[in-house]
Length: 188
Image 1 (tube, helix red, strand yellow):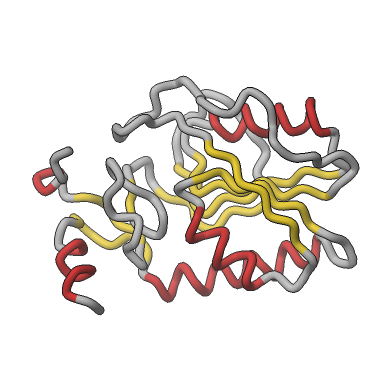
Image 2 (cartoon, rainbow, N blue to C red; image 1 turned 60 degrees about the vertical axis):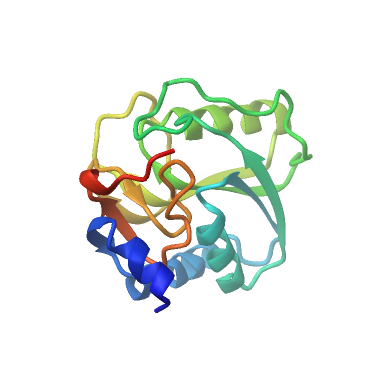
């Protein structure tokens, strides 16, 4: 482990999921997805930026033809709680008509972001199938319910960083997922 990563790890209160545990579960999820989409081409829509590491590892483990599309969506806007406002492109920049679609996000929290994107894909793109995968699902009351087909891990309702997830742009490069020490939050 580099000194830089070790220094960043010291900002964590605790490690929730280590790198090995994450990689094993991502590989298992890939097998589940391969089984469900066997024999077809998969169109993947990934919500950025938090799902970057997850989708890269997941897609490298899936042995199917894949088309990757990214969509920048946000409801956090720099803090540790959802603002309740989902910001995304006015129109979806890809055609998913009659395709088998897998929508991927890093974390299911309030449900606002995933529900909004899922509804838009169904309404505007009319895919043959649409399934949803998340790395993390928080145990909490949802503001919007959204069906999720693949869940990496169920976690408590805590703000997490690492493995692509950030706090004000920091901590994305951690190989693990952890809980920040409130006394060590970076200053903007």
